[in-house]
Length: 476
Image (tube, rainbow, N blue to C red; front, side):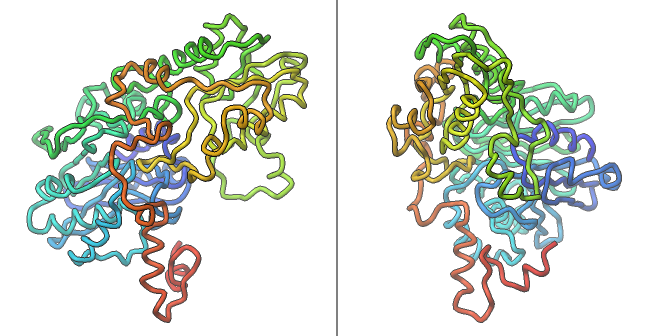
């Protein structure tokens, strides 16, 4: 099971590159192994061979609440009052975290483990309630009180559980193995582990899988609002969401982008890899030849060795390098998935001009990102979003392009083949489907801020990350 879960996490590495973990249960106990780093850095053959069990929960972390620390890596482990163990993995982000913290303190939930995530809060509340009601009933009562995006997979020693928020913001799918079941964030992970796709976990649904098979219960009425940015960037191209291939959607976005923002040019090139399908679609619809003008370093992922100032100044060249023979003397259409701060595109346009491009026309396969996401994407603050402070021509001048075109929200929705009423596009239009609390009660470092305030009146020294000095020395 540990190896199968490892392969599944490897397939989902793009969804989180800060930490990875796997828990296994054998009917008697749960063992958790987790650490900071990529899946391949955290696990090796020896570690995987030592993890025995027939139930497993795996997680690769992309932080939206809580800093990148070992304590915040998942799966989260808790022990209930009855002595049973529980391991939980969470994809998404809650917006009523401060409210849950107050409830946890009221319930006497121990929060001194150093973790500062909404995931840890959920697991603490679940474990506390399970002492009296059992894990399944505790979940049926806790889940309706959570607000925000949550795809959860958790287990005790005998049963695997999965749940998806009523809006279904993030994807979650159910698959079938010859001798078991799989729940994963994307269908691509099912393919990798040899599972067949059964269906999506429904918004507002709780699944339980044990020796007797699978059972389903509904803890809330579905109000589908799937994240449209999954189609733009987050999901793998070989994944299917809502019955629609992500790759086919991105190619279609490129075709619509060409119709909305045509230009005379010699070559269409993508910003690899996320811009590739849309660039193919743009070339198909425009009749302009498609080519590879940028080479991506496949080994640039998360690194724990900080580059020197000299290397840092090279910026984008760490990841992308131009093919000068292809680019020189050409009028280019450069297709990318999105612009957030604009730093990448600014460096890219400069680099292409230095490589000999005579014109650089930037085309973006999503509308302008004007609003932050509170449902599981760690975008910049609104003040840092380039589209929030500049109009189209201002953005074009800022990045140094000869022309700039974004696909319209209407075209993006049409390419997804989903009705707009079933999609969340808050990052583009500011229409948040799940109500947000006051600004002061939301944010990535919310729990760390509360923790700092709680100890600031005591003699304990407080570090920049919100932990006491003693805890900092104790952490691996």
